[in-house]
Length: 126
Image 1 (tube, rainbow, N blue to C red):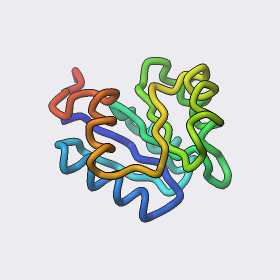
Image 2: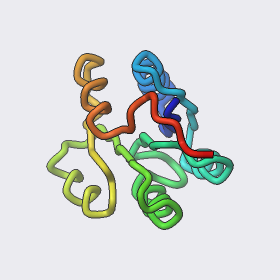
Image 3: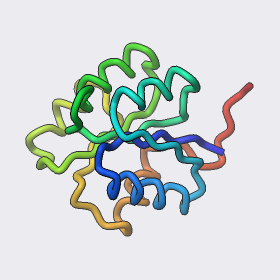
Image 4: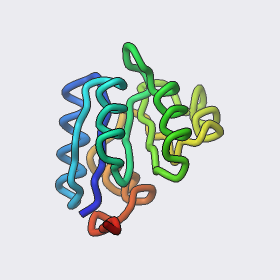
């Protein structure tokens, strides 16, 4: 089963993302900040990361750069409350797999994530 790491300092958004992903068949681990998310990535590389752009401490941009250095091919989806025009091109140029605005509905979120995340049934070779 594909493992997704959700990193977001907003508990409500983090829980919503986890619920949507679990409903679609993913195994989800959550982190409340960038530092914890990075630690979890060091312990075991997930199949993909979904992260918030604006977080205290290690923000989404810094975390994206670190993840690209450590795991260049890891899919990373960035979420933000900012408008897409402000940040989407910049984040994609920095290596994000996709950018999704936080003003999402569950109906749109699932299909959008499915386009850029590995299949839930994906198994990593051991």
